[in-house]
Image 1 (tube, one colour):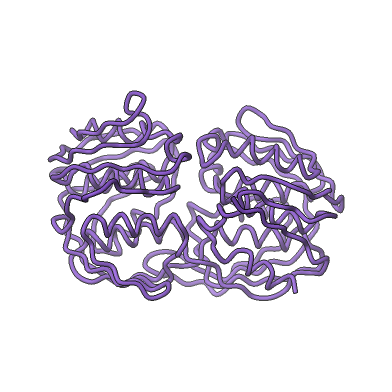
Image 2: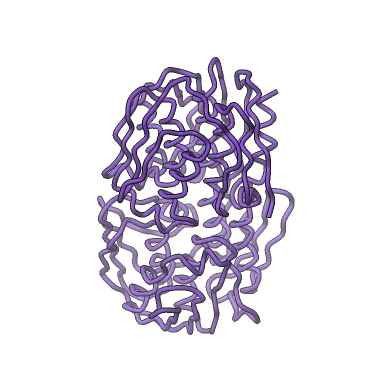
Length: 431
């Protein structure tokens, strides 16, 4: 395990940065490129551990993928081009990989096993396995088919009309990948909006899915065609640099070509309520995904209430929003965020414990947290533990911007899951 020391420079943060490729889009570009017919090129692929797990799993399924830095060339031969793997498919720490591949593999005529690290084997898989079983899939998991490893004996499926119990892009995407191979109409109804990268990606490959409100309908089987995908910068990665600028007086940062999918950018809505100076400029579109540059200037912040339908749009940004709230005047309340308990860690408890450890005034609630802001008050710093969670690790690193002593992040190797160059880019704007 690796300990890394992060120390704020005491100077304003200034400069321009290019964020690594969007993690969610990178996963999907590899999967859709593999199941399409013909060549797909991917520019801006995120070379983080999670996305590399997806890449390696698709290779183990017989797909030829050539790499050159963040550029991929995928030689897809359709669903029929995938073949039975000769070993267990290792998803590493990637919940996206194991859930999406569960849907994909359920309709393919061979046997496969999905497994990962200790964290993955603690994450709930029943929410994916149960609806796939309703489609006729043969899947088995530990503890009553609730946890990985997952064994799959692929077979012909039948369509379903399914109401998702929670808004989950991973569950929805797994069922879409199964439905694309299933004859007839599959209907999925969500209780609230979740990320729609899969739907946008499907259309970019020539597929068809009809969305009206929270209801999605697709008719299978579908034939997809290889295309050229340009991956925008990851908004969730950008969030840490937005926070760093907001915590550091007189800062001015520009983040180039960041994905602004409206199902992902609830943090911007919250920051506007808090009085942050965040501007979105140079707007464009790549493969159906909105993209822009983000300009951040330091400003005095005020507390906000965060909850309800906005939570799925900022679920990954809650730890860094909690840190930002420590610099806001008043008391910030985050609620309706129980889904954080089943991420890489219990992110509610871990965020509260680790921020409290370095000097924040914060407390845990049943479904969120309460943060008492003290603008200008410094943290004590010192050791803090990521608990193997990449987003907790980066949040603690950014906390060093308002700490008297350096913050020493334990298990800092977890940061490479989504942002291998994070430390270098933070150092670049601290000079």
